[in-house]
Length: 311
Image (cartoon, rainbow, N blue to C red; front, top):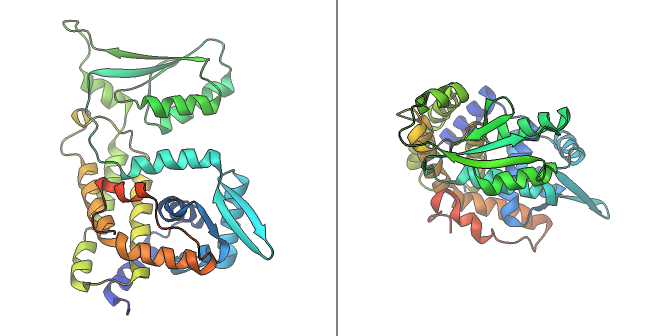
């Protein structure tokens, strides 16, 4: 199929104005495209998938080598060929992060807070690591030694504490406002605990960058599978860069209007439009090196509330 020149122009302009770092792009492609197909890819297929982004063989090998050193990827050799797969520990973190990326924005507040209290016996390095990981999960330090979130995911918190070896070394409690007790307005706590300005600006930039793509797709009609894959990858790469810094506060505690809602709608619309042809390109690339590469797992079709057009 002949590539659409206007879509090509958009891709070239986007890559020139905000070129993704190769290591981060490899992470996006693993999470978005390779994990649904079993989580393993041969180097030749990975090179084919990265080539449209201007990532050459040498740069790719450097990126996957570093990701392997950091424990994200494991490498295996079969004669002269190499393959890469996400390590079991990394897979759990991948699954949590990408589940969050594709999930609808429907977290409502039930009036409770999840609080994490560090025990006195926790040493400084462990406290620092715990604080870093909790901030990544969207918690805020609301008092010395206390981190809190108004919509804490208990399953994710338990997994985090287990991974850090801190299950028996911190206290986790849930608390709610006491009716009739005079207290500071909740909005003040949210404003002081979470600076949402950068996240909001990131969502607004995402919408501005991708708002013309639906029109390009409508004008193009049927889209080339490789172009669909490139657009879908750039879409998720840009969206996840903002979304993973979003503390995921309940809808009732967010400023109105919240630009994350528009960003989610746009990402969802485009992902549905692009996934069918993009999947054909991904599977073809994987099966060139491994004829047994599987179709995407069932959970893939639940992304963004259901990919009705991806079959």
